[in-house]
Image (tube, rainbow, N blue to C red; front, side, top):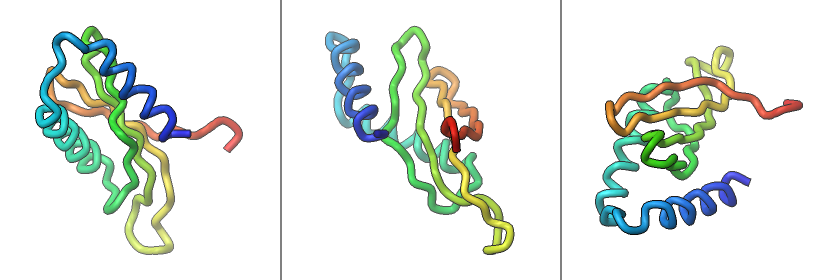
Length: 103
């Protein structure tokens, strides 16, 4: 499901930003920065990360879903799902835990 959402987000992003799109290298550099910031703030050693979900320029945000374990040692480590919302203007990220309905 995440893969379908990210593909749709990428197509939408390309459509919305068509005329003022940056180079692929610029996007890759931004996405690397977003992933590094989000993973660094998550407290996870090796999380799974979704493709970046880019919101419109008026919002100026990029979201990344993270899944992995937090805590140290098998007895204390527990699995969590986090969403990271990165602000393109400030370079800051906010992270919150989320749960799917019914889980």
